[in-house]
Structures are given as structure tokens and as C-alpha cells.
Length: 495
Image 1 (cartoon, rainbow, N blue to C red):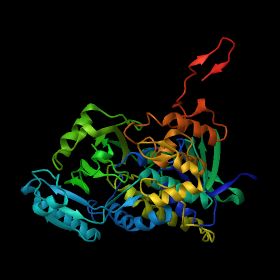
Image 2: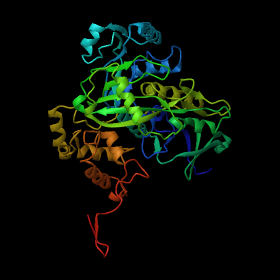
Image 3: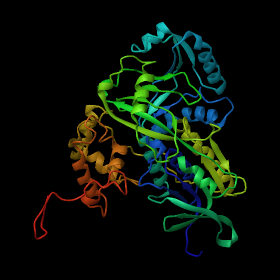
Image 4: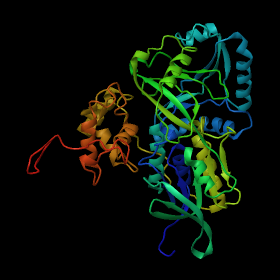
């Protein structure tokens, strides 16, 4: 094994949990690698969710899910300051629509208090209508949780990855793991051999943060099998013209299938409605269905009236990594020394990610015994958001780089400079979705109808070895160009 890099820890999966773990590992003085099956970070469960930072009243008291939810919520403001992603603490309301359900709402209040959620209280209809004028006529009361918030899950995951990379973590994409097994490392030390595609990697510790595929990775090393069920949630996203229809995140009373359909503003000023909750078998089954979208509209009307669905600009679905016990599975795997699971990370996994990262990195270092990274840099320079800064700040950006004044995405006010910045980062944008997730381009009313050609040109200019013909929407199999519109007999091309 001479000359082969032996990593101290290898993380499988570059979603929000994997990238949070990677950032926390980078606080240690070691060698770390993240393997991701897709072409970018935030390509699975983390990219299609409600973007809610939950207060922590829903999870069963005493569970790891409840503990890490509350801890993660408390860490979000500092994390947002350090990494520069959008986070707004707007608060949430769990709406009770029938008087006979009030005991369930009061039980939720008591559970939240037992979980350590601060400032919870029940508001009556009169106060509720003042808080939310468009609340449904049948609403009788609500649980108010002022510590809940909203964020940008794409920007959060990319920021965590950039911070980890800045501090020495390596990322490898299009590297789907096909085998994991024990190995003897240099000096006879025990470790792991991980095969991804045609490459082989060796590591002292392996961390399984593979989302809906975490069961497949776990079952490669353990006879005590794990089952992860993809739970599909469908959403409708409305234009910014509907963004002020509610001021807070509005939930239904939870059921055994989750928190139900919610209605919430987004940090980009849109209105988001959903999700459904359907257990399916296909781990890539992110299609929407007529039945699901009808259910979104029908159920949302129980808590919020007159939602202007005519302003819908897109619909989408995401998969949650559900396991039957409805609990996070985090920690060492019996009979597999040096292998750690981070599995079953469904809602409130996004909220819990800062605490998950700390917990898993600490578990890994109990095995590794690495010293602190004395040069760790916690802060990251964000990509400016022209919609959230003042006119004066924008003018100063243009003075520094005139490309900030060249708007490429008119719907979302994204400039050429932001797109080039997104491409130049590590790990940076290599596809249209990569640009979209880092800058917000293509997310507006026209859904990329106007800005796509120019973004493709910038990608081809900025990414080494990427020709215009090879630009993809989201990695292999999604090329945007299939040919040229005019070509002479002699082969001369006219674009």
C-alpha cells in the first residue's frame, strides 16, 4: 500500500449531513475525503425539502431526533453568520382546526417544553388572525414557536462544503460507492477499503451519510440489516407575488406520517406549499403526480385560505430517508469497527445538521485521536445576494467588478459576476443546477427560459475542459445541447 493515500475519515454522501460532518472533521488535523454519487453537493434528499429550521416540539421526547433538533436550531444563527447563507427566524404556527383536537395541540406544547424548546405558547383565534390574516376560517388556535425559521438548503450545503474544502477536505463527485469492506492498512492497522466506480480508497474510519441509500451502504458491512424507505413529498412553489400570503410557517397538527402539508414563505420571497408523504420503493422516484399535487392544494386549504395557486411557477418532489423506527441512526455499527452510520436522517434532519456534524465528528475522533487543526478558518465569503443587499452595497460591488451590473437572470436578479463566482469556488458549479443552487438563478417565474443560454456560455468559459456542447443540467445524462442548428455540407458549423 506504499504510495496510496490513507484517509483518516471518508464520508459517503455530500448532502447536508455529510457536508456538515466534513466541516466538523476539518477542525481536526487529518486527511478527509467525501465521496458523492452525483455530480455536485446537495443532489439528493437535501435539495428538495421544506427548508424549515424546526423549533423542536414534534419529535418524541428523549429521542436523538428531539435532542439534535433543539441543539441544531440553537446553532443555526452562528452558522449562518460564519458561512453567509440566508436564514430568517420567522417563527411557526401549528394550527388546530377543530375544538375537539385542542388536547392534541396542548400535548404538543408540553412535548416541546419537555424537549427544551423556548418561548412556546398557544395563541387563540383572535391573536392568530392578527398574526396570519389569511388563516383558514375554521382555525380555532395554534401553537406559536418563535424560534422556528427558514433557510436556503442549497446555499447551506454548498457553504458547508466550501468551508470543509477550504480547511483541507477533498471532494470527489460522480463516485457512487459499490463496495465497502475491511482492509489492513500500512503497519497492519485495521481500516476500510471503499470502491467507487473504478477507483479504490482506503480510510481508517468510514462514515455512512448516504441518505436514501444509507441502508445499502450499511448492509455492505453488517449482517444486522437496515431498511430505509424513500418517503416522497410533493410541493408547489409559487411566485414572489404570492410570497407574503403568510408571514410565518403554518403547519397542520402532526400525524404518524409527519407534519402534514405546510404553507411557508421562503428566504427568496416565494410561497412554498407541501409536502405530501407517500412511501415508495424507487430511491430515485422524484416525479410529481396529479394525485399528490391535488392533495397539496386540498390539505393546505385546511389551514390557510385563498392561496393563489394561479401563481404557481413549478412543482417538484423530494425523498426523505425514512426508517421504520422514525429515529436518527447515528453511531458505530456493531461488528464493523471504524464504521459509523448517519442514517435515517429525515425531518428535522436539515435543522439538526449542525449538531449531527458535531456529534459524528466527535465519534470519529474517539477512534482517530487527532489533534485540532490550528489553522481552521470558520468563516466563508458568501456569494452576494443582490435581492438582500442595499442599493449602495450593490453599487459598491459594481465599482469593484462591473459584471455585478450585468444581470443574467432577470427574474431573480442574478448577475454575471455571481455566476462566475459560483463556478470558481471549490467545490464549485459545474452544471446549470450547480449555478442555480449557489446563486438562485433559474428559480424565478420564467423557470430558466431566458437565462439558460447565457449561463451555459459562462459555464463553458469558466470550467476547464467544459465545452458548450457538454454543459448539463445536473450531471451525466442531462446534456442541454443535442446538436447544432445549421451545418454546411463541408462540415462548417454556423451557430
